[in-house]
Length: 257
Image (cartoon, rainbow, N blue to C red; front, side, top):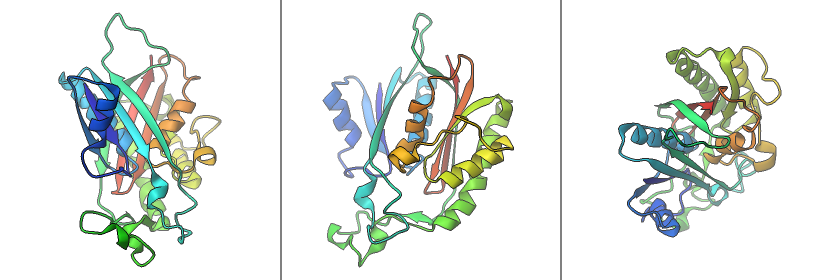
């Protein structure tokens, strides 16, 4: 098996938090690692798990997304301090054997990832910095962003990414029943959904959990998925899509079993 801890805000650099999770859960004959693709970490981890399962190198994967976002916020900056929350999500991705039946499970139809370098969302804290430098005199060692530029860049990037992913699989947009998007900004998500659907999203087509959890980085789209999937019927399709610093975009197309 495999354990992946994928998030924006890891507790430490090493040893890998994923290996500690593996030990704590008593997962033997497996390997584990941490990964960071900012807010896209969860969908990128699903892609890693999906590829490993397809290759036959593993049969099960545990993905954990612990986001301690508030630890890296500059509370003197109105551009970020009120946006984020802390949360953790976890998923099991595994092969389905013919005799197995799962309640409320989804089949991964395909995954797609994209990265394109940008410094509009950035945190410069790292091995070349001392912790005591992470204060108001060095605000770039905490979370910083150019929010308006991010909005203008990311909305069309995510629209094209999801549309092209669906096109590659010969799936019509009209056949997608749910868009579980990264929970960064209500206006951003409404714009993305409108561009993809060609109209305003209706009802639960594009669920929002920002009002309850705030922006929880990579955990956000998974929380939206978890709290808004029980009403999906067998055979219906949905898309989990996360996006963020990098820029990075990851999409996972699912079908309800």
